[in-house]
Image 1: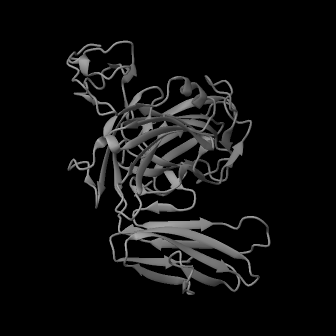
Image 2 (image 1 turned 180 degrees about the vertical axis):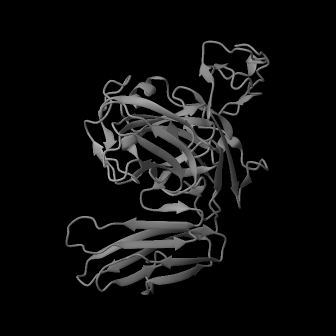
Length: 434
């Protein structure tokens, strides 16, 4: 996932990025509009359209393209502003905007039957989109339910300046957390600030996660610039998807060769209600998850059942990519008798798609059944929990009302300070005890 960009008409879509547009996906200087055929089967063509850049100082030269569009006898009409004058009839076009303003650009595509598809863009000539960057937490990192996560956001804008220079106040940055649950997301909390902490829901979610739900935690940061009259303000955003320690095998991002077994899971696992697992596993088959970041992850446990045994190789970026760990799956005495098998993991650094490649006896299509993966380590969670009183604070008068924390040891270290999302500073924790 890109960690910087801009967007309009945002909604959650965690399979690609934390916030995407409903009509356009904007990242940096390019906007993409795509739609597969909708409605009735007699609409036999697809239209894709791009415009880049969609904002910036004047004169602003924008390249328009319909590359990827398919259909019979396609005819194109490009409109570069609201005057409804056809600016070009070519599949590819360009236009230079010399006067500041907000321009509605449009592509109309007709096929040989006279069917029409329309794609729309808004061009902001004379105002550049702000760039929002998330330095923490990293995209795809692992967290523990109920614990706290640190965030740090910065913004730069050609017209407004930057948070680093102090010309953009941190109070103008909006943060939002959400819980991704199966195929949708629930907004959780909103706050302001450049840095601070947020809680990954609470411990009750751990029970649901163990019951076979596909759950992730989302964090999105945004900034609305001041505009550049007569040009409208533009929203920049950045977002990350955070992964829980337990990942049900059936909630993979991509796969090859395997099948879902609706009765193959371990119903006796603690808190486990889902009986779904992946089965029909043969040598060279794989599943993958994205995004994933192994920061502070030390090892992996696989909950599997097998009569033959085999191996699970953890590889980054492809099924033949660099190896970061190998879990040896032993025999358990039955196809539904599950056990946990462990191996150390090596953090390759950065965010990746991680492939879990299955190895074993050649020709067998039932090497083992895999119920879930359990990642082990602290991840990005801070050992900080809400409590009734502030423990070890030198200046409790600076504590924001209603926000109390308890700090626990992490590798023998204590954080020097916590900066709350509302920009109130929590003083240094000087006590070594909790």
